[in-house]
Length: 221
Image (cartoon, rainbow, N blue to C red; front, side):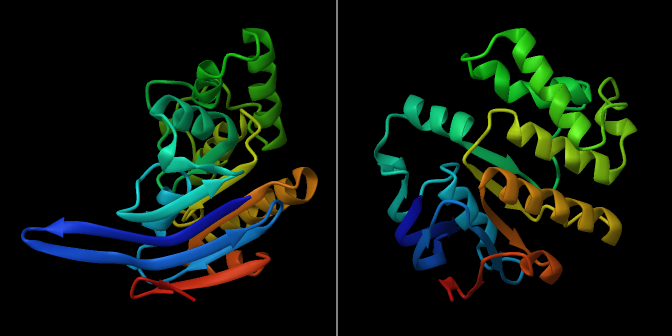
């Protein structure tokens, strides 16, 4: 499903080049749950963003379902990110001026293959499945951390992506809410054969992954 070949990433720090990723190769098949572990600053999030087409590698190629992401026109790459890849971030990135329902609907508004009624019903169904049916009219500031993260996951799923990328999805949650997010992700994988790649410090999350990698000093092991 997704292949990464010889991925390098450099960042400028004044006159110095910081070599964050050093020739990473990775193959991930449809339906796998992959956990990437490593200390802060090891490049986990950078790798995830490259795999999802959010950040371009300094060198190397990423192929998603046979498409070399960084050889695609920008419009086509944006379409793949919107339709086929869902993103869940540690800090949720919910828009504070929009309600829970409106936040979940946002990616669907770009995707024009469904009518407005169908999109709304889809969003309401997702929120209900995550126990948020009584929060649809609330704003993010009125939600707990666990509710915000479940809202963010619902938003990532609104377009039925084939690939879900999770960047420290339990990083800001207590143990109970973290376990709930783990259960949700496992259920998605089992029911929809959804491919999930997550970077995390949480060893409990890594326990339900089919593959576990460690990234350290720019290398994936």
